Image 1 (cartoon, rainbow, N blue to C red):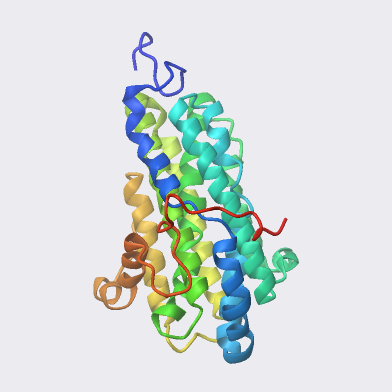
Image 2 (cartoon, helix red, strand yellow):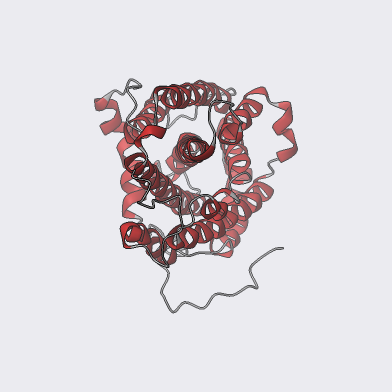
Length: 331
């Protein structure tokens, strides 16, 4: 980029038209607004009793471990997006970041409440090696590197957070939890919570990739061999950890409506979405026939966001004039 031309790292004007396409993420966030109270009551009154009284030990163990694995991610993500404007001082990025921060707070509070109703003990995180390893790779975006400074540091942080936190870390757990509703085994409200959460995580991932691509276009020298190799290594580290997590989810047995093979296939599919979006050559093996037969339903469900039961609307279908009550919140 010419020294005379200001880019995304420099404040230019109130709303720079070069970045106005990012405003679609503001609209998406507003349309999908929901609060923890949307799902909390029915999880407590319907899904939690179903879990405790009607599900097998194999199912309960897999569900509890997935919820614990999600909770440690949702607890780590509230501050990144709201702080991004400090490095990329564009008004639209500040707007999107503030809304994403609110959404991630909603996610954290929702999964904290879900964990309480299911009986998940979050203090066990440090006792479980594979969860400690997940925390390690989730923190990779914050690691300092003497060879990466200034604008390149911002790009590195953004890529690793977008890839590892927003997409690599959560979707197998979403898949497993949503599979119960898909197999008519209950957990309807937990399923709806997954639909709301996962569709928003996809939006956050897409926003991050859009900003990454702007930086790459404006400052192509930042995306050099060293950074590309570092990103690839960190994605591979995340992948190895996620494979071990699947083994841990199913340590007590695989639920009878699932196979480990299909869950790994879905993991690979999602990691390929990440590597393709970043322009990396790294790929993971996907059985297309297995994906179409066993996996495809989940992303179809997320992208359609259709309400699928009577008593609880999926986030994104609330009326614009819906009254928001604070009475359902537990502070």
